[in-house]
Length: 402
Image (cartoon, rainbow, N blue to C red):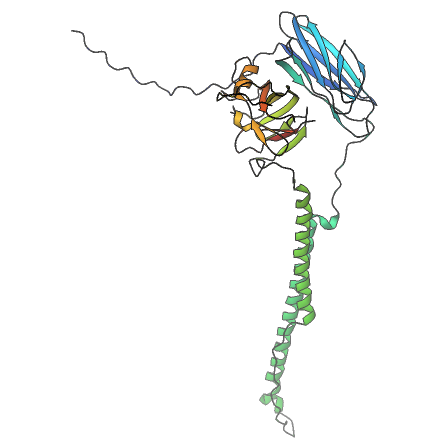
């Protein structure tokens, strides 16, 4: 008869939690830079870092109302409403090669910055390899300087002036009290020395009896009371006025209800501009929507909406913290006209990422991913704004769609 096997010892440590997700190795990288010229010019470098040739589609989004004057490398422009919406290149990249492309736009208004994000996609133009962005600014126009507030509206100056006024008022009151007490002491000393035996020596006629003077309780002068009240009132009014002038310009009446007082400060920007919140840096490079009625079935099953369509946003996400950070599909929202919003379509986003759930694991510290996020909307109007955030308590960022 064999002896029963003793139970195995418990593990020495707890099983590890979910490993943070790291970005998949890039096969194609993109870099965009601007040139110092009177008119906007962009230089794009597309590099194949893999060991085999690759076919890629490069798309550059252009600012609204802009027109192209020159396109290198065989690119084609897509017109929309009298302006150029994007420039597209179809390239065959040899292994370990770098291809330089360029675009030039027509002259624009002085001081107007123009951002042109660029992405390299797979040959069918659906999955992004990498994206980059650059903002052109007029070289002759100096950077805008922040105008300082007048001296009388600066908070430290107001406090210093109020403190000086209070000190002067206190000094005047102290002088008045000191002089009053000194006068009393002099009067008391004169009375005490004038009525003694020493004072009557050598006199022929006695001093007539004099009634003791009636001392009235003296009060501070009216001008002093009024002056002190005016000083205090002026200090309160100045402080309140300064606070109002600083707070009123910061009120944003266009904020959505979800952008209340969270952790950090909410940031609003446009397409192609990197926006940073508490944990992530988001950059929306592109947004494209299908025709109405092309949306698939929702995650919960059932029939697809009659006018539903899918809008796909190409988003770059960078973890700017020193620790891995989770994020959730429910917190990424697309706002429609009228204030309505929809969250990320998880199944469509998973399909666009080749079956990979980009929200399943937290992002590793310092990593960056470029991925598509899909939103299923109804109606003919595309989303007007995207709201992206890392967590429930993060203020997040808001990206205005052109």
